[in-house]
Image (tube, rainbow over all chains, first blue to last red; front, side, top):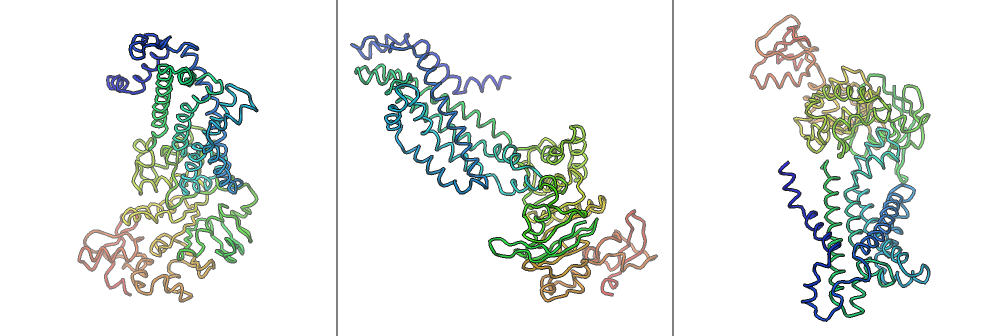
Length: 247
Length: 307
């Protein structure tokens, strides 16, 4: 019990979480500090939208885009590791790599005429950008299942979908999760550029600050997005440890 | 029990099993023996259809193996392989329960069966059930592999070099176990190995394969004493042939019934090689012989070994 409390107290999840929460709901308290450091900027705290509102919108964009990346990415990896899809393995990899190398800013520019301003082009850009780490890791994870384990599974009479569900995916899960962790963390950072086309994110104060030469807004947005990314990363690390408990 | 009729398999045009016909009677311990690449594993894997045969038929208990779905077929056949293929993310009890679960057994029946099998393989259920495979030694993992193959009480057991990657002392113990299990359950076992000593020790029937073709079928004594070709003679080993002869003959065949001797006895079912080893170790030239129940039935003299 005491050990658990101590583990909780030294957990970065707790302290980073508290700091994030504090800045999110009560950034106003830092007004005097910003006023002293950057005299002449009025108001000192970004106020075109509430930080909580920015957070929900940012979370929603990343959540939708990353869920889509995860589902499509894992499905793609499963498909190309089946006998029927083996021939498509290279193509899938190239497609995912193109998604990754194509700059999100360019995707936004191309998507806006088709989808309009705001959240939609941002979600599309994030989805494409987040696909590669998931596809690559899911393929590596599934192919990393020892041949003997697969052989034993079918040799004992598991159907192909049972081998996939009960053996391949659980054994690949830690590697797949590592891919999602990279993908989601990158998406949280990248989502900020969505504000360039009108999506509401922690990038909104950054772009406003850059446009109006108001450095405090840039700092406020950047610190919040960084803490958000770190929190997510730590949460994934914790989930990974749980998945790995049989090792 | 198992009948292969003119079975053939080629991979990418390379023939690995050629026109193979073979009949394994019920209750036999049939060892497929040969150098690597002779097609013995492929033959084994065609029986449970992990490898589809190109030509010919394979019957199990009179029924063509292609008459049912491969999954239904495999759930009726025990399967154990060299690297065990245990599921690393499942506890030992869950690993053993794989096939019973696939067959939809009730929970209590599965639990009872798992405990029974662990005990049969001399693993304490209380200690081992909840462990993960990586927490076990290689020998213990292979015991679990055998238990898992036996789980749904199949009539036929296929074993692909199950003891190939295990140290000699543990292998020796596991060979005794599987021989004991074979005697106790009367299951038909098809066992692949390239180890002639293992084959002579375990088999009731040895099938020797070379480049996908059957070269000789016979009892261990036939194979050692009456090799039908130079290949078999060479494979059995012209060098250590004398010791192999001792390995396939039992003490009971040579002992002097009614006589007695001093010292630690040997069992009449033991091989002459074991008796010779015991004499060498104890620096004696006669041993008392007991039957399985431990009653003295005779004596074995050093001279009897070369009669």
